[in-house]
Length: 220
Image (tube, rainbow, N blue to C red):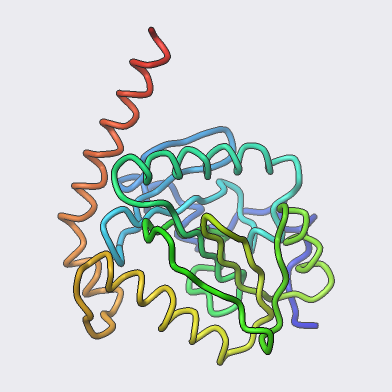
């Protein structure tokens, strides 16, 4: 089993050196806040519409997020789904689950990739996820994982580098190429941050319109 932080410890701590714990670091990109989460535009987007769902407290991954936050998380995922379906394409959700993370604070990537047509390889070690409890159970028993969900299925994978790179390159990479309508070489985070400003501006404008439409509907 790989080392990991315990759920109880994660639930009680914040980290002063964690960029996601410091609101000042991400305030420009925050689109929505709830009691325990933020929806944030990725500062270095792979495509227009690239969002993150981030818990306010410092949990190492979603396998460490407690069950009492499940309903709130699922509500936000549904809101992102409705937004994407209205302005882009149905979402693909992706989480590193500590494995190959660059920011060690739970964050769920949301990409408007639509149907990616992924069929799990029987040779890979994976399992179907039916609820957040399945992710917590895996994390408590095995440690690291990575996770992908589209409109058809939610899958959790054991942390095998070959499988991980296949998903990154041939599944998510294909989604990026299809969304951007071109196959481009991988870009660094710095390149994506520099080139992503107009993408974030367009996303923000669409999100504000989406929220305004939702408010209007509720007032009727």
